[in-house]
Structures are given as C-alpha cells and as structure tokens.
Image 1: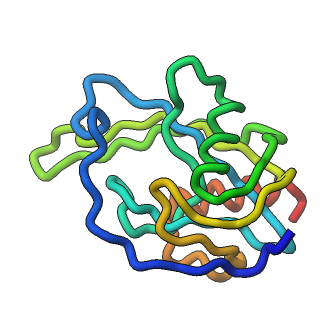
Image 2: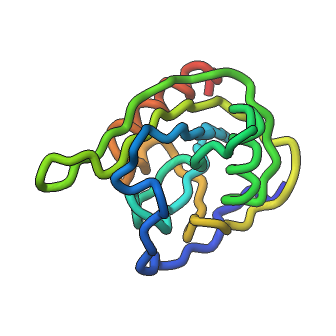
Length: 158
C-alpha cells in the first residue's frame, strides 16, 4: 500500500477556526489510531489549537454524521487513506484556557482503533505533514496523545 514515510511541510500560520475558538458549547471530535508494522500514523496540525504539533488524524464531527462516518471522513481528508473503525479506545475532554482563564477550546474526543482498507498516503485538509512513527519517536507528541496511543497499541496487540 505504499506505507513508507510521507513528505513533510513546515506549518504555515493558520486562521482561527470559526466557531471553535471561545465556543458556546463543546465540540465533538474523533481521532484515529492506525498502526502498521509497529508504527503509528501521525499528522502535523495546520490549525489551532494544536498548530504545528504531531497528533493522530482526526477532527470535528459534522452535523448528521455518525462517529464512525466522521472518523472515516477525517482520516480520508487528512491522510488519503480509507479506514474502518475496529474499537473505541477512549473518550476524553480536551479543554484549553487562555491566559485570562476563559475556555478558548473545548472538545470531547472519541478515539478509535482503525485499520486501513484502501487509499494512498497524501496529507491534506488541515494536516501539513504525515509520518509513521515508532513508539520511541513520540517525544514531539503531547502526553495525552502518547497515552491514547499506548492504550490503542495494547488493544491492537502491536
């Protein structure tokens, strides 16, 4: 399937995500934990709140979309890969506050263990980089993301 390391770009200045910054309500997000040959698929974020950070593929759920449909769409848009969800890994709150203590971002994230069913690697949408990372190459990944990667890896038996 051509799962070698993909090219990487430097993140550019991102515009604020309309309606997600200083929200009136939490946003529901989905994430995909995808493993291949002992490596996990990561994307480099092109927008706040995680601009420039390496993370798992995912994003906000759209109105009328199921969680399974949302994770499939997000992975396809960000990585070019087609996936199916195998199991729910975790459901977590991600709340970021500004310097004044106001809620700047609030997401309820549902993370899924997924397997690739087709497609080919190409980062797009709000991702500005794509790579398969070994478990000892996660220093640039947020601690809460490393935790969910470890949990999913254990579930996958990788």
